[in-house]
Length: 203
Image (cartoon, rainbow, N blue to C red; front, side, top):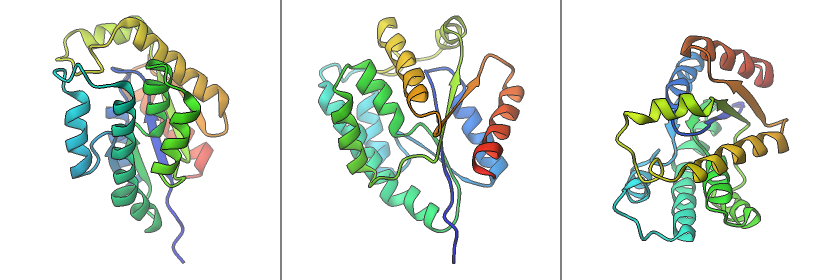
């Protein structure tokens, strides 16, 4: 009998370093590395719509539903099959990002966001969500030189709500989250994440 793999998501604000850390963690665990949005071909098409700065008329509810659609395809096509085969999966963002961005950031009803996304993911939520927290001054400095996508161009107030949303999500489910101080060097953050995964999931 194959033992199901573990599903780990790295979360945090734009510029926190989660994409780099997700790649390193996947390598350390010999896990499947993926991302949201865009972890599948169909998801990539949806990602293009969501991140295009030209799409200024995109309604907040449409945005939330597009994210859920990406997620449904991601779970069905990639994550669920990998877990069933006993592979661990490391994802750069997950369903929790929708709660933070469309729930807290866009101020859409959190209960509705949860219900829609729980249906989309067929109840497959991350076994562990890792929140990388970095001080706002450092985040601002890292983002300054980037070519910004549609979300990265949002207001400071929006991103403040998202950061607070992530912190609240982690506080509400401490058994499912671990918070990592991301202000250290990338190598130190990598070790902290690896230690946390070993303690929480035994892998």
